[in-house]
Amino acid sequence: MPKTALITGATSGFGEATARKFVENGWKVIVTGRRADRLATLVEALGGPSVAHGASFDIRDEAAMNAALDVLPEAFRGVDLLINNAGLALGTAPAPESRLDDWKTMIDTNVTALVTMTKRMLPTLMERKGAIINISSTAALYPYAGGNVYGASKAFVKHFSYNLRCDVVGSGMRVTSVEPGLCESEFTLVRTGGNQAAYDALYKGAEAIQPEDIAETLFWIAMLPPHVNINAVELMPVSQTWAGFNIHRKPA
Ligand code: NDP
Ligand code: 8X3
Image 1 (cartoon, helix red, strand yellow):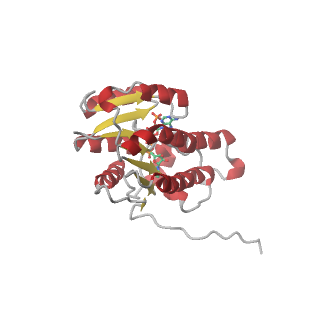
Image 2 (spheres, rainbow, N blue to C red):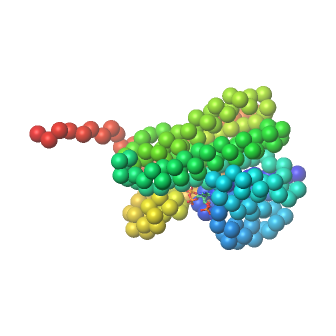
Image 3 (cartoon, helix red, strand yellow):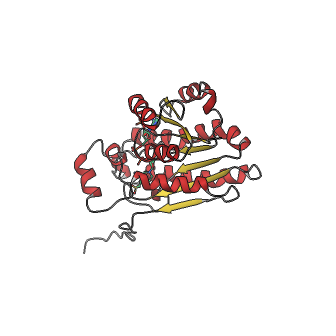
């Protein structure tokens, strides 16, 4: 009996690569995102409606989320794995110059929508001894200038994952926080408002982690024996390390 994964944010990047990886390995997937055209193309590429179901909605819209999940085809109702992947960063400006609207959008998407989806799927996942993989970030672990609300939203995701584990103990359900560093995807175009030059400069020569690497990691987590819970995975490209503390000095 094939297992089913619900992957949020599958219209690009990690989510799309992960959908491909799981279907290639015999899973069925529910893929979500706002861009319905991309979902339709992906469902087709994955092998059609017998293996993939596309559900297009804005994840910040709770009613739309519930409506989409209410009408899941029967064959996709037994979700075994939720990958809370949809998310974004907006801007790289320091806090005083950041836009409050951008902060709220990140919190609504990375935090509020993630807990809403989790709450909705929890009964099914607990009953089926399923799993949740939440996509956090190294930005949750190490502060950097301009990371302000994005990093804080991802720190929430990590700690929520840990606390969730405490609450579902005994159910057989597993919870993992995945914390990637520099990865190449549309993430940076979204963050910079479509600035291709900034994208090119960030990734040039860096050999960043690719979405397929994340897909590989998520699949490894999902396929471990059911008594093994990976609490967290932190991963970076070999080219990326820590920059050390910043010290502001008074002029001489
Ligand atoms: P992408 O921009 O390629 O993918 C983001 C996905 O999230 C898209 O499918 C997008 O779908 C979806 N999404 C965003 N906002 C919404 C919304 N309001 N409603 C529904 N779906 C939404 O980025 P990545 O694949 O790189 O990022 C995936 C996750 O990984 C994010 O949570 C990100 O924070 C995290 N991450 C990324 C890193 C990186 O360096 N790239 C590193 C560490 C973590 P659509 O626009 O169609 O709605
Ligand atoms: C994305 C990684 O370093 O751009 O979560 O914040 S970083």
